[in-house]
Amino acid sequence: MLKDKQKMSGLWKVGLLTIALLFAFTVTSALGSDILFVIGGKDIKASDQTIKKHLEGRGFNVIVKQDKLVKTEDANGKALVFLSESARSREVNSKFSDVAVPVICSEPWLFNELGMTGQTKKVDFGRKSRQKDLTIVNPDHPLAASLSDNIKVSSKSFYMGWGVPGDNAIAVAALKKDPTKYTIFAYETGAQMPGKVAPARRVGLFLFRGAAKNFTPDAWALFNAAIDWSIQGTDSVAKAN
Image (cartoon, rainbow, N blue to C red; front, top):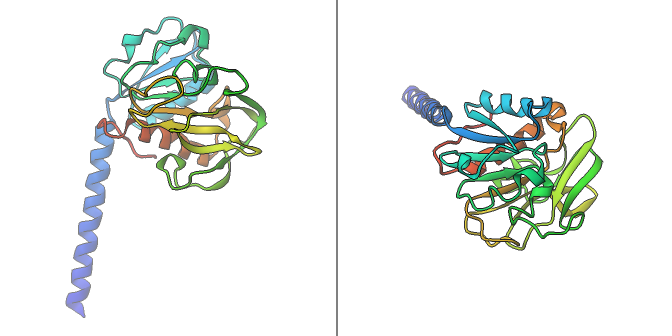
């Protein structure tokens, strides 16, 4: 019996050491990884600042660029391009449509430019006012962050971005009262999207103006899952804090 206990104790210690080493490797691999964060306006808004600080807290180096000044080549060498909802579609346009770098887009009016949806506003993409919740439709996918059913993502109502993606999309979450409009959806590298073949992973994320300041823990879990899934395989994944 004593030998069995000692054996179990030894296995437990080995398990803890393995987990610690994996965690250390994962966090270390994130340190110094660059994320290009494209925002609107000259000065970073409070909500965008919240996102920036969160990413930096997870070990990423966040390079902020104004939508008007950012260039396609700014994506070179980056682990990820994050297009904030504050970024103006007329300024960003198709700058990142063809980059072979993962892109997360929170500006619905850029979904069509990225080829992620069709071209018609309020039909293929748009926003819904007075939202606090969304519905997970694909709980088994990593982008669902192990969540299911109806999820409260904000303590205050906000405009929630949505898109109607193509047949090859990974649908993860939808508006609570309209399951045909997806608030989290994605494409694998090489997937045929409505507008083009995805040159790298693409994610449409519901995060709209000011929402991050009032995020719930579940919302941050979904946000972290979007980051991690997007850059998986680039040696830049940082696990959620």
